[in-house]
Length: 71
Image 1 (spheres, rainbow, N blue to C red):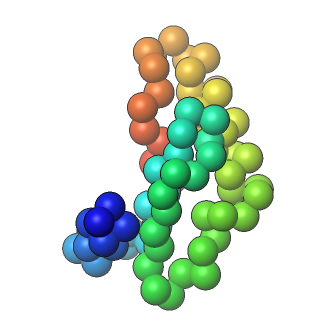
Image 2: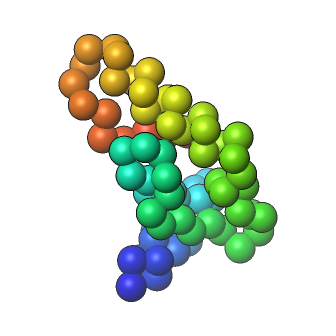
C-alpha cells in the first residue's frame, strides 16, 4: 500500500525520480523510483552519503533532522 502511494506521488510530481524513506541510521525502509531509473538509491555510495548528511545536519543546531531532500 505504501509503495503504491509513493509511486502515485512520483507520477504526479514533475521531475521527481525517486523517494527513499530511511531509518535514523540511513538504512532504507521503503524506496520507489520512476520506471526509467535503474534504482540508483540502493548503491552503497548513496546510502553512505545520506547517513553522513543526516549526521552533519544534526550538528547545525537547528533541531532534529526529519527530512533531507536531494536535488
